[in-house]
Length: 229
Image (cartoon, rainbow, N blue to C red; front, side):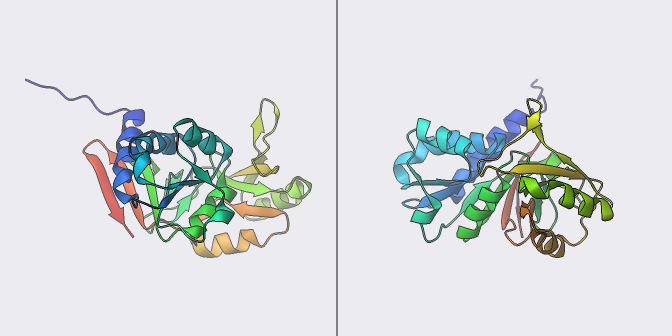
């Protein structure tokens, strides 16, 4: 008799990272995101590195990992378009709208996602939500605008906190800070993203509605569940 034990979150990440390989277009440059789930994808990508030209990366951390595995990394300015961008999410709803930025790379992730014809989200099923907003919403901001933006979120019922690293404000790859906002329920992600991005001092908000997922590979106890939007 065989007994099966539930897969750990780490094993689910490995599963979806490997499943994402089927969306990589051979002979082209692939867009690569940031985070622990994406690290599993990068590791899997190394197995077919001879079949791709290379990658465009959304963070210094991913770039270093790709290069260490022998995968060429191109600057986003060197490419006109990408067939696919593969990245994780902190939350994803039933329409493919996401909250991203837990790894502080949200601005570069949006830039690379905007180059891609298709966004493939890789996540475990715990990230699937009915409405965005339970996960603290990351917002990359220019430091001099921090308090002004904090007050504007407070007026919406949200509490914004500067993300810290070793007791000091975390500095992004772009030299800016991150506000994590709690207490929001984002009923209309498209309108919300458009509004917050207009606030002076906001570099970008971690709602991905204009660059939403077209496919999500969800790691579940039964295997990888493919959701299309």
